[in-house]
Length: 125
Image 1 (cartoon, rainbow, N blue to C red):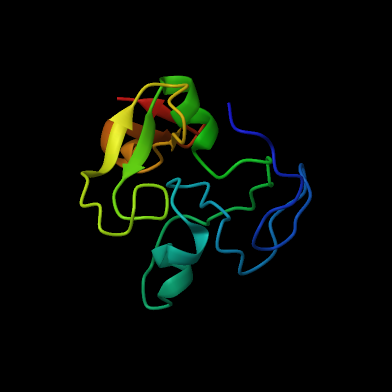
Image 2: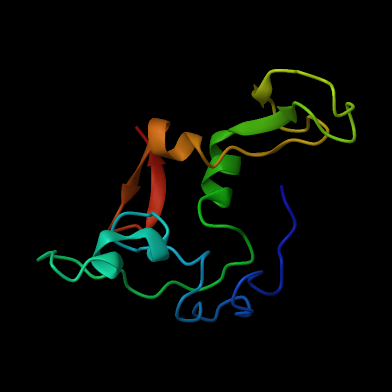
């Protein structure tokens, strides 16, 4: 399990406190995406039937807890200081929990999970 960060890296919100306006990490509570990228915030010409809501900083990136719960981990096998900048590798590779250097696979949430608006969390499809 990843460690909890006491403050949001973008807006500085403490654990249990709402993200600040304009925070790049804040989550849309309607669709689970980034609040800054949500159409209801970007376009005033749309008649959307939802509001993003206000989520609190949990100490983890949005979706990180669910990816850990589902056992979805990835490791970067590509150019970098660890493998050498000329290392071609495979890019992001799915791995098991406990693999050194692995991080939760947040991208997989969009393909293998869906946002539950009532529970305000990702659930497996």
